Length: 157
Image (cartoon, rainbow, N blue to C red):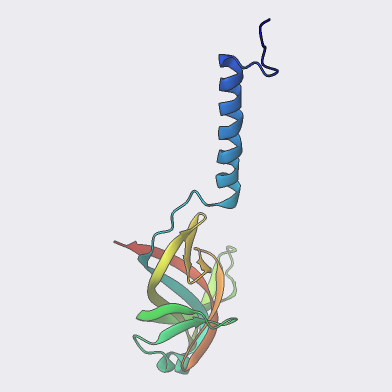
């Protein structure tokens, strides 16, 4: 009498088993995000603050540490400070074009910050804080607090 095994496997069953196993493992890495390796790189990003009182700019210095406003996480150091006169729309001319007036006591500040960042989704993050163009962000330095818009991000190296 011939003994038969209760489980019979053929080559098709083996291939199906491997395909299902690879889909399960691939799905796990896809949804848990463990298939990405985060590498740290130097980034510079610019935050634009509009219509700030001009005297506040004097409180910011190069190499000041910049922290996030909510949890005080370090976001890097001030790399450059640029300012320009602020303008506001004051109405329209006879042809419907906007008329702008300068605010003599206010400036638009472009604060560039340099820090260590990682890729985060489609953008970057510094110490877990997302840094994306168009994003509003609140920061503080030793003598300045403000909320602005990230207007530029540059990866160095």
